[in-house]
Image (cartoon, rainbow, N blue to C red; front, side, top):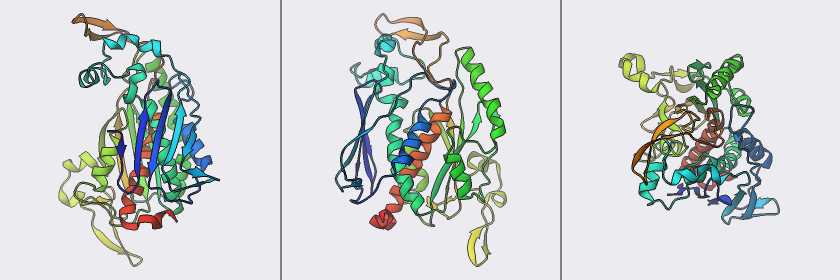
Length: 364
């Protein structure tokens, strides 16, 4: 399924090495001015950087083909097209019969009876996350105009850790600072050690994973649609659409299972005449609804599956066990690129949920 959304609806199309990728955004009102500076900044942060990413660099030269006229949305479906220019389809010819370990190759082979486009992973490629960045950037500008901010930092690369958010007190200035950096960290002094860890894996043709910590601040109380569109369930379903994400928790997450209720409960108090909680162990969500406290999300990103080390696989034609060495251009880690996609997905999900309460008022 390549479409999602309730009050905003989006449709993705295209494949990793196809001629075009594209996204259609429905139910944006007429008269919205798109912040292209923000959009271009976010696209640039998702692109490979330095020596810690793949050598495949696409310029992401998008073209708007409907729903936009004289600098404003028209109310019609807003459609972006992005050409793929830097493709090397020959790198993937052997995937017709030898699936790559920990990729979608084999289950997709079964599901689509070997008719799917396998170059670069086809529809399963991280290349398609550029479409999320387009959608998320438009949602970001709308949310920030209402003083709602979404931001993330690289919490860890393998076993090297950044500081964590103060989940009781996160200011918009901190979020803005993180959002201006392509390798966002709360403690920038840890960056060099993270780079060393990435390069060490790359030098032996291996890869590493990591974790991302995200925050949403200034969200009104009561946002969410239980039972099946709660804040947690909707965010989870969308975030798991990002390739490489294998785990999610909210607030103290799995650590809550090791606490007593007296330790885990977020007790209430009046603070300067306002109702708040003393702690935020539940990460700003109770009963699937926002509490007004910062929403805290932690995501686990697996090591990049494409590595240069010889691995065991199978030949689907000869039905033999074989050794596979993956060729092509691949990331030794995807955490520093995925983080900007994570922000985009959260921006979309939060705006879509807000529109249940506010409808068109949120676009003004």
